[in-house]
Image (cartoon, rainbow, N blue to C red; front, side, top):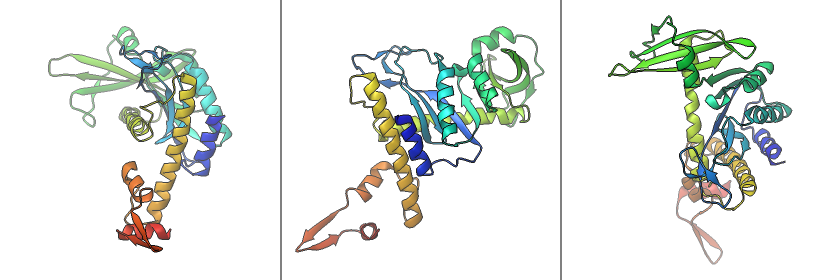
Length: 292
């Protein structure tokens, strides 16, 4: 199974510190295409909408979904399968972050039963309908002078959790109320807010996979075959990051932030020409590369 192969590569390349308090981020992305089996997405364009789990910048689980499939559909089953495979590989998951697609009782119960601290965006409609009662709002100058924040107990399913609510007011006096559901009772409201919003970095992971590892240009006409392609490219992503990390430790001029195009130029398209068995190297860096 390619998912297990992906995780074995992750472990062998030491892409994740398995004993650390790792955070699992789960999100969906649209891959626009006009394959014969692709369907209309929520923005009415045609494509697929895979769900992807990341630990840091490392993809650990990929589930292909068609464009019209709701993000909430059978998400608890997906998370159970993902977490079980991570557990098989002894990768510790301490925290879980997701958008409102995970705001469902089965997902929350799955995380709570496993002892994972979750941070899930509450559905805005529920917040507006259920929380019109007065809050003990307080201004959070650490975040913004126009943002108020509070938290309270919130019954969800058969347990009581914590709901951290923010209310932002614009210049026109209009308010936008949003909530984060969590089972963490120790952190301050501001820390919960900042921690959840750090999940926005996952968008950069998608950009990297789509642009550098060709997720944005799927080669096959069938969704199942394209899922295999996404997994193979994800494995390539892990290998690439391993190479970059290894080379950066050996070459002083080489940094981990190097872009794939530059990496390819230095390590694949090495400029050299032969003349009676002699190799002429146009750059001192190429000489160092050839000696590796």
